[in-house]
Length: 384
Image 1 (spheres, rainbow, N blue to C red):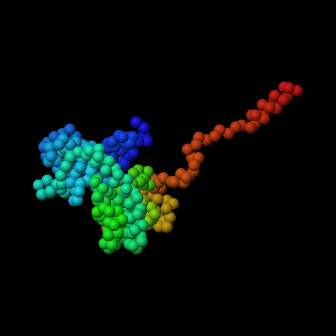
Image 2: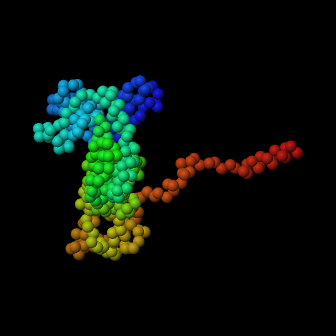
């Protein structure tokens, strides 16, 4: 089979194989291609907790739990026709077995109190063909929808369009800073596209997760890889880590503060709780020592006798600083910081020279011109 007939759809996590005109279209599930995919670490285990409930995945991060009461044998990777609010939809089964119960508990879905929509049957080749025809309309529909929204003067951005499996309905994902009155927009969409319309507002972080990409760390964006719930991020997370409050460095591709700023906040806050607060200089017999820098994770504080210079820094552990502060409160002064080892500068890595293109090239050996000249003169004398 030619590779040209295979199309990878990472938005839905599948590979579509298109043969000749007489052949049917087949679709295969690709677990590694799914955004926000869940690993079934209970594969092969049966406890009877959720035998008929399956997790079904649609485009991007839209998932749902559906019940199979038809008695058909359904497993992970099957394309199934499921119940929708109007008509039917086509999705891919991503989880089955006891892991579904844990996933439901994680999403706050109760098996007793929730009403699950039904899985009608497995998808037939005709259903897959109709589904692929609807998917082929999404890009063109999104471009036309953006033009219509601009003509109506609405302050919104349509980020993505998702067609239902039967092609009778489409979800328009849009981004807007405020409230948008799109009643007229829905009427124009319905007349233009001849389908049922559903508008769904998303945030800038969710849009970045839908589009995907690589971050400055060189890895896939966290919002597109595994983050399912977005927490609020403030500049206090950067302050407690002693990061420079530079908006260009702290902002991600979505224009908001990076989600990774929250990853190490708890570690820094725990380390800061063991570091004493220095309100003024430490008193020694040979002068006053001023705090110039603090290594939070190593719990080391650097002091200098010159309050305006970092030339000579003396490191002290946080516990030693706490003892000196208690000594100063009762009027006692330690001898001197100069009795400690030689002043040490905080460890840091310089980035100078990292932009040099030839920094990885092997150094060239310099040829000794004197030897060649001497060899030529000796050869000339022999010929004479």
